Length: 288
Image (cartoon, rainbow, N blue to C red; front, side):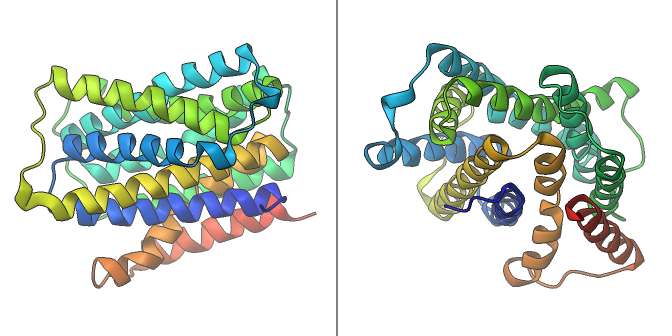
């Protein structure tokens, strides 16, 4: 496996970005709630299938297990539900832009929880990356504000959770240094939460004619599980101030892959500036 945290973080960004494009294909067949009820449990199932080959119980620790399980209650379960509700109420562009503020929460939480104070250059790179991905997430199709201000709490809460789980997981890895165990436990708990929520809300099981959607969301589950495993492996080796902003560059991957799987994508000034800012922020973050 790769041993450089920045390479692992960029690989995680690639998997997150690819999974987001695959999600758009799957949504042609299934509702977001149905997609979540397929992708997250599929992730957990795939992880359990490789347990005999990947899980080392030699360093098992009850404190690490408890941290990973607590993370699983929030990510991806709670984040998925909050994001779906935010998209429904305010549209995907505004919700996505606010959701990309996660690195700010991650770096602040890491400074408090882990004592990882970022350097001025890292802070500058972080700010530039966040500005770039927000530009990439905003679009002409954004809705005019026809929603109450309290709805802002939904994507901001999702961003805060995504930010907090990174230093939280790093803390758990200090007890049980196994990124695979962190993903396995977290996704198992999240799968139970997602399926329980779907049952309580009466989310219907996909009809047989929607089988292509099942396949697309199974691939989404594989992509997201791989992304989280790579992100946790990066966190085990490097500081949150490096890993979190690099993982947040996944909109670049989505932009690159969208023409291949979704058709033509219009490239305007906003996209060009967003790409330039994001790449420039990455260079600042990695510069020695």
